[in-house]
Image (cartoon, rainbow, N blue to C red; front, side, top):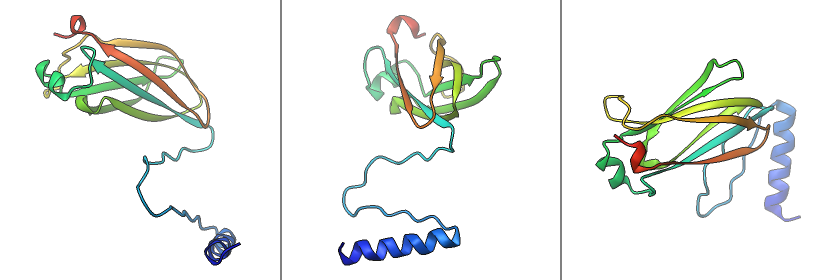
Amino acid sequence: MNLASMVVSAACALGALSGCVMSVEPIGEPGPPVIELPAGSGSVTLNWLVAGTTSAAVCAQYDAAELELVLYDATGRPVTRALTPCGSFTVSVGLPEGTYTADAALLDAGGRSVSTTKTLEAIEVVAGTDLAINLDFPSSSLR
């Protein structure tokens, strides 16, 4: 064990005794952000295309400023709503383990729909995992 490992081990042991939590990150290129979820939670990541592409110019062409994702629990009650820029083409939402449905639509800058609403059924969120869903808004679904 090298000196750095011994220092980190000692700091972790002291932190555990005091109830503190310590995070050690490697030096260098930063990786993707880590999503920390409560125990019993997972996440859903929605990736989308607009007219078959991930071009922000196509979002602008259809006046699509953002994507709205609304998730509903098994009783049909909305549990969360996420708005993200159209040109990001991805959004992640943390949720408790369970079964959900969702509606996704592209909105203009005024919050008006510029696409048909896509309904996603039987979304199974499993604790400690991320469910990736891919969705396309073909030109025929855009106004």
